[in-house]
Image (cartoon, rainbow, N blue to C red; front, top):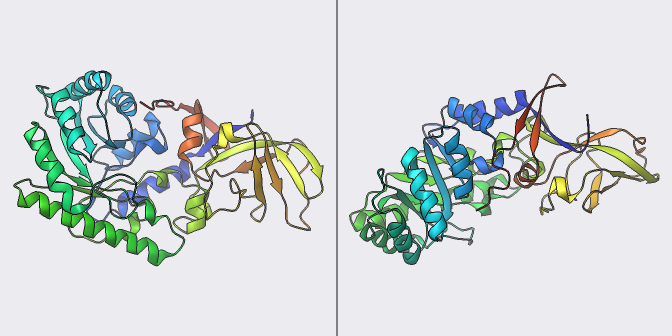
Length: 354
């Protein structure tokens, strides 16, 4: 095998997909495809019962629509220029399309952009449930929703992203889920008060997906669960047996007894750090080692005292801290079953960042 490369254990991946689908507990599942950007994986998620796909960009939506996806949610507060307007109109011809929004100005532009499409474009109001990135306060959802309706858009409901649920403490993850429920419930109520029914009340992430309780929320959008990564392992939302994607690399230098270097760097692993992970990734064969530094094509690994380094030419697996970035950097995923490469899947939405 030529290294570095991203390798997916298809049996582990399919088990992750099936487990999430079986444990959804009546929630609609709309997985976030930015985690894999791969047509074959999206097909498996839909086959397991997902109601549609979540994407981050118009470009990702275009890729999956070209493969036959018929229900897409761009979970991002788009600022629609002329180019995006044309692309959204084309998408609406072939797929049921939802778009996120969190401002009066953005829904006004969106309404103008998609006016007269054969199929109405839905808008879903983004609510800040504690992550403090994008989204309006729950009490302000009605302002944006009313503006969207006045712009001729179909207001489908509300959504949030619980980024503050990335915590090692299970109680903190549960608390984040409860905060999502409260924020989304309040936002749905204020929409109802101005005559807008929230058909879609959408939340969830991989860390909080297992913490949800039946109630006002009716849709979950986890993404990383399909592969998992070193962060999910560190915070306890998966086990080592649930890690489906690995970066495989070769030992190219052993400059000291406690240190070796791999031919994988930030151009393959990405450069995301996590407060829960020591270093730049997790090595299953050296669980107490630390990837102390990355350059573009080097990963420096420091071993604990008494552990012998691998010899030159040894292939070593590295689990990325955050799987989404390495996938977006790769042209293809090597698909492994029973230790053998059985297929190669293109990362079809690679670089579809607009």
